[in-house]
Image (cartoon, rainbow, N blue to C red; front, top):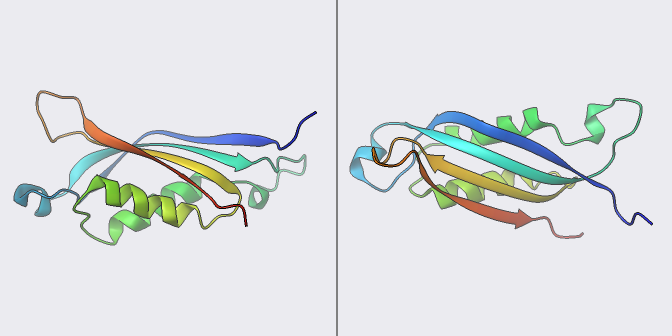
Amino acid sequence: MIKEKKYLVLIKDLILNASVGIYPKEKNRTQKVRFNISITAKDNIKTKNDISELVSYEDIIKNIKKVINRGHSPLIENLAQNIAKKCLINKKILKIEIMIEKLERFKEAESVGIKIIRMNRND
């Protein structure tokens, strides 16, 4: 018996320029940041092909860009938290996992970053 149907929305290797970081050289310029997002959503998949019933990856990317465009984020943890808050307004989203990586911070590493997991309350 299927209790609650769910599906995943994935955004992989989205690279955007963002103003993020606590160091002086990070505050005065943008840097390349990679986003990997996994969203667990309520499965409203029906046969009528109506995107309004689903979680749109286009809307998620727009939300990420809106948060970035608000201005400088000292910590990528705060950037991730703000993106999660913006996305979780959509009650179809049950859980969001956001991984953010700075791609230019250390020449010795491909990237450095964090991952957060946030869930919508069952209202």
